[in-house]
Image 1 (cartoon, rainbow, N blue to C red):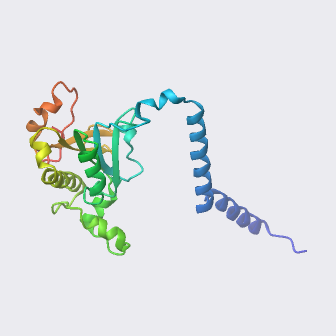
Image 2 (image 1 turned 90 degrees about the vertical axis):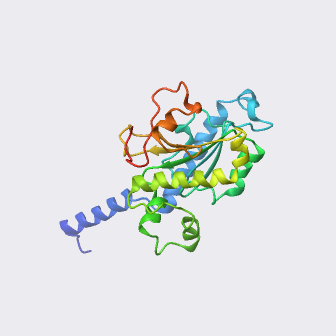
Image 3 (image 1 turned 120 degrees about the horizontal axis):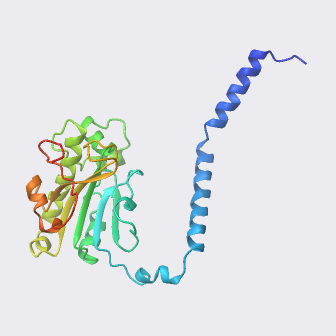
Length: 240
């Protein structure tokens, strides 16, 4: 039997090590599924009926949130207990037109007084809307076609313009509720990358009921008494 050279052994070891370090789609899926099951089992074991009673028979959320599907953006960054409190709609680019029925359900059926549009830094949908999305599946293109970045050429401007244009859609759809002060529409950016300089993961407000200036947002009755309010001017794209 021919002996393997030292070089061959090293190559074989490297290949085996490389293969071990790069999990396959199957192993990644299996590992994640096992984690999901384990976490849920732990969750169930630590709770009783009383933990669900507040929202067991019906839901009465105070906010409808339209946010991006990006895995780095989660409701727990906005509320310490989203269950029963946040009616959340998620899609690429945090768009109303992608899920109009779901948004209507939150606003018109559940009658949440707050409609919150949340964009975020590093948004692939906004980047595609700016740079183009040739080669993507038609289903994705169709959804990206409804993003309006207002001619933006950079990320900051693009994510702000997208949020503002989503709010313009909401103002037209729900103008009667807004006029009666039964609904308030607010837009913000979740800054994953500290792009705006307020800190990693900061929530930065850019629009309230169509008002986008720093002064108008800060003086809005919704923010009366709020401390450390973070606002970005759409013209300067800088914190104020």
